[in-house]
Amino acid sequence: MSEAEKKETKSGEGDNHPNPKVISAIKKIAAGVVAECESQGEHPSEVICSFLVRAHILSQGDNVDLTNIEAMKEKELSMLTHEIAEKVLSTGVPEIETMKLQVRFETQYALSMEDIRKRAHATRLKKNDLLDRVVEAGTNLKSNSQVESLYRSIFKLLLQSCGIPEAALQRKIERELAGVLETVFPQSQLVSFDKLSSKAKRDHAEQMADVVMGIRLFNRELGEGGLGIEDVPHLALEEAKVLSKRMEESSRDIDRKAEKYDKVLNFEHMIPGSIASSVDMLQNELAHNRQIVLLLNQLLHDSLQGVDSIWKLHQKFRSILQQLRSLVGGKSAVPKETVYPHFIQLSNIWMAMEKEREYTELRRKVYAEVEVYK
Image (tube, one colour):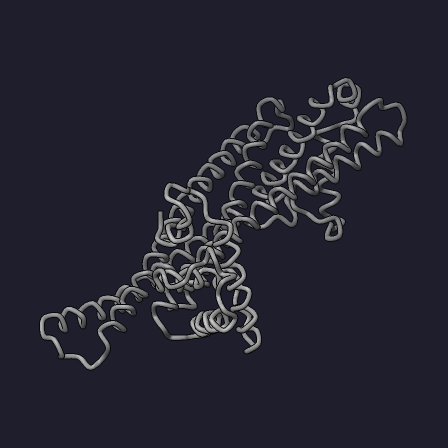
């Protein structure tokens, strides 16, 4: 347990939960800090203010009792709020900058992860809705209008799976998708599809979407289709490599800077009074730079793992494309049982590389936050 957590649970020995009064007091003081900063034209996050409130309280020892903030005089509370606001607004104070850095790092990471989760959830909800429509449209097929409705529903599912907004759909891409869909799901299969259970219909529709995407990816490789599809394997790998290189260079530069502070402090330790600068200030600068290096290396480690994962996906993708080339060759027809699993694999790997791009973008955003404090 951290010192901050110990302070927050001070109300009782063995109490593993923060005291509600302490949480309420921190929020109240932090809100006052935010208001004072905003009155001076600055707009700090409430998270940073809350963190600095806790840090300030801890530095005061037992002089401030957060469990009984109501007993504080208005003047005392105002002075406390003002002191913390000055810290929030300060620049160039190493220990304060280090705290802000850590909070910004953790906050940006958490926000970016939540953003990824929300997008994935929204995508899944949209897909489920489209699958429900396919099941509904594909049940009790008796008229041409019902068949048309089913194909429209499946077509919309394909657009979603391919990441193509309906508003941005080009005529050439529409024709390509329609042609591939007709190959994968000809009207001769309508009767058997109608007889499937709702779950089987959903599974079949999902599989069709993957197969269609895989076929478009293979056609793109052959130069015979795949219109509008980005070169995700190349982009994913290059983006991760470029970011990793930038992080590595930044980490190396800051590490050299930290070494200089370390040498100066060691020299002062051996020959006291040999430097004019404040030893405390230099120690805080050293700690600040080491914290930057630590966070950069953490990001770099994740980024290099991402590069490795993307490279393996890239190699597997190329291998499957080569297998398909060998299977299809110049043949006019190949059993779907032979090639469809490969198309599904292509689609799944493509989606996995798209997900890796999201994580690369997450690291880029967090890295940008760290760079501010160099």
